Length: 180
Image (cartoon, rainbow, N blue to C red; front, side, top):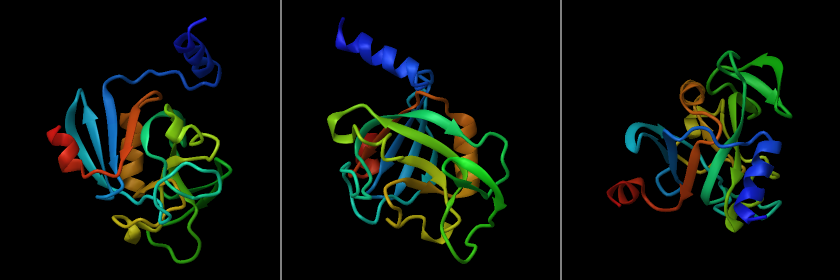
């Protein structure tokens, strides 16, 4: 059986089947920005935060993986902005932006799965695009591997993209990528 067919069967069985062909996300660790493309046209730019430990995919590294990934699961339908998650389940607690104290995952989760050897561990490492209450740190590398966004932005993005949305994470500038 061809490898591509086996890959598609595995995606289907894990609930990660590709479905969204109209959207694409380009993430620049250099710029700390994300670009949403719709039908190959830029439609939104978001300030984000990637890992303070740099790029990579090794277990225990807390780095942000690079390369081509896709949205495998979406978690958080209809929850309020600032809803706190523990182990991908809402706790019932809601935090406002820049609330003092801890820094949990909030609002929505877009769980990523890698498509290349350089990001093959992303899913098992729980690499997400998710909301953060530490919105003051957006635009700076401050995460532990995930891509953090403001609650308003991640809720909007969550509603716009589906499972299977292609995600490209690069250390290049978005300006350079868009020109290409």
